[in-house]
Length: 115
Length: 114
Image 1 (cartoon, rainbow over the protein chains, first blue to last red):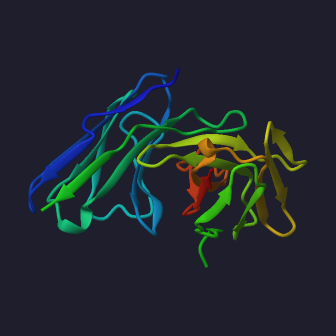
Image 2: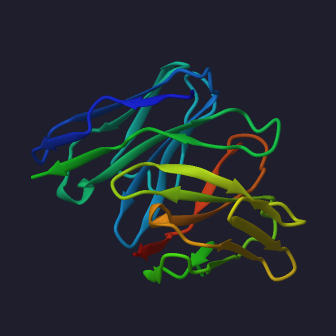
C-alpha cells in the first residue's frame, strides 16, 4: 500500500512565524506535490518536484518555498506565516508518467491555522 | 474560464437513485482524465480513470467526449457510502518540468439520504 504521511494533522501558528510542513512517501515516487485546499476554491497547486533538489512553481507559489533533499521527503516552508495562509495543506506523490494512469496519492492533510 | 468546471452541487438523492455528474475542460491538449473521490475531512483518492471508449466499474460509469471536451460520471443504485465530493481531474502530458501534473475541478458534493 502506498503511504504518504504528513508531519501534523493540525497546526496553529502566529503571524510572522516560520512554518515547516513535512511530507514523506514510501513508494519511491519521483514526483511530489504540495496543494492547498480552500472552500469554494478547490485544490490549488503550490509547488511540485520531479526529482531530488528539483522544484517547480505551481499556480500559487507566492509566500511559500519548498525543499527536496531526499527522494522520499518534500517540505513546504512558509517563511513568514500570514492569516491568508490558513488552509488545508495536502501533499501528494506519483510516479513519472511512463504509463497510464498517473495516479497521485495524497497524504491526510495538515490543517494550518495562522492567528 | 476555469480549466476544469463542475457543478458544485450539492446533489441530494435518495438511496437507490441514479445520479450523473458532468464536467467540462477548456484545454484541448488534455490527455488524461480521472474522477477522484474525497470524503469529508479526508484526502482525495482516485475513483477511476476515464477512457475515450468509456469505462465501467461496478455501479460507476465514466464517459469522455473529446469533441465537446466533456466528462461524465454516472452512479447507479446510490448507496449511503457514496456520499462524498467527486473531483473531475485532467492532465496534460507536458514533458519536462510538469510531468504528472493534474488539474482539479472544485468538486461536486453528493449526499445520499436513506
